[in-house]
Image (cartoon, helix red, strand yellow):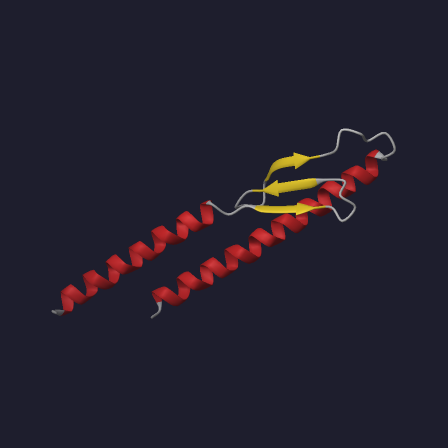
Length: 98
């Protein structure tokens, strides 16, 4: 294999790794439920809220408590996505530097 063939093969493999990583990153989702079960949230690959589930019967729940639960639960879901994203990017780094 010539030097140019090796460069092309390495670039092709790198591109395939990048495409795989982009697919994995765009598919990331994080879901978390408040410890009390009050809310469940789902976030996208950037940590943006895409689903919020709240039980229909909230008669005895203070609005501030509900707000804190939503924010804290969304933060946990986003942290899960961030951890997964870091692992995916570390894997890409390893593949590109082999």
